[in-house]
Image (tube, rainbow, N blue to C red):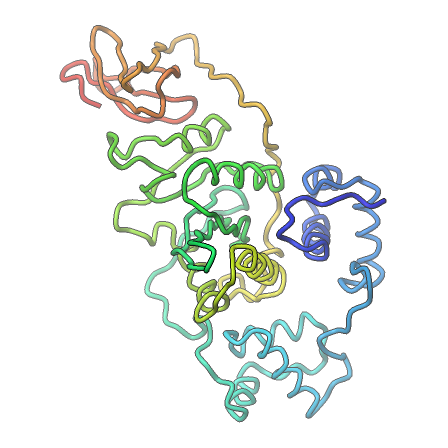
Length: 385
C-alpha cells in the first residue's frame, strides 16, 4: 500500500508534483526529500520514473486530459488562449504565453497577439501587475533559504469565523513555503504550522517578520523578543524584523499578498475555513509550479527553489556559550543581573541563560547574546541596553 501523505489540505497529485519538481534538481537528495514528504524511497523513485515516462499526467491515479494539443493551430490556438485565461483571469499576455509554452503547445502566439485575442473577446481585464512601472529595485538573496519572509495576509471572513492566511515566502526563488488559513494569530497555532514547514523544507538561515505579534514584541526594549522568536533562535535561525511603517522590507511577501488577493480572494466567498484552505492550497500549487513569474524571467518559483540541507530537530538543542562568555540567567521579571548591575532584557527569556561579551570599542560595555543572536547591550556606565 502506498505511503500516506501528511498535510491533508494538499491533494495527493499536488504533493507528487511538488516532490518530483524538487527531486529533479541537480543538488537534490532523494532520500532526504522522501523522508520530508513522508514516503518511502521506493515510492519516490516510482514517481520519478513515472514522470520521466509520461510527464505530470503519469503522476495521476487516472489519466487527465491535457490543457492543449501540440498540434493546435489557428482557431484551436485561440481557444487554448481563452481556455487558459478562463482558468487564470488575472494573467496577462506574457504569463499566458509562457504557460502555453510550458504545456508544449507549438507555435505559441506572441504575448502581444495573445493580448489582442483577449481584447477581441472582451477578456482583457487588469493583468496581475504586468506592465506596471517598478518604483524601486528589490534586493534578492543569492540562494534559496538564505531568507524567508513571513507575515499574515489581511483577515478573511467566513460564516464560520475569521481566518488569517499565514504566508511564508523564500526571498530568492519566491517559492511559497506556507499558505495556511489560521483561526488565530497566536503562537499556539502558528508554531505547529511552522514546524511542519521546517520538516518539509528544512531550516532557513534567517526569517524576517514585522514588529507585531507573534513575530516581535514591540512593547519590549528595541522591539524585544517574542516566545515564537525565541523558539526560532533556539532552532539556529536568525530572526529579524522590518522597520516600523516600512512594509517594503518584506516586499516580496507583500507582492505575493497582492497576487493572492487578485487571483483568489478578491470578490470571492468561502463557506468555512476548510473551503478557504482548499482554495489557498490549490492556488499555492499553481503559483509555485505553473504561474510564470516576471521577476524570475517568466520561470516558475519551483524552477529556482531547493529545500534546505539543515534538517528540523525534533528536540530543541541545548543552549551553550563559549568559555570566555559571562553567562547570566534572565529573572522572573525579564531582567538581567550581572557585574552588580541589572537591566531589562525580555519577558520571553525568563528562566533562560544569556551571554555577555565585552565590546572591543568601549570599556565597560557588553553585548548581550541569546544563543547565536545579539539581542541588546549592557552599558555599565548607565546600565542601559
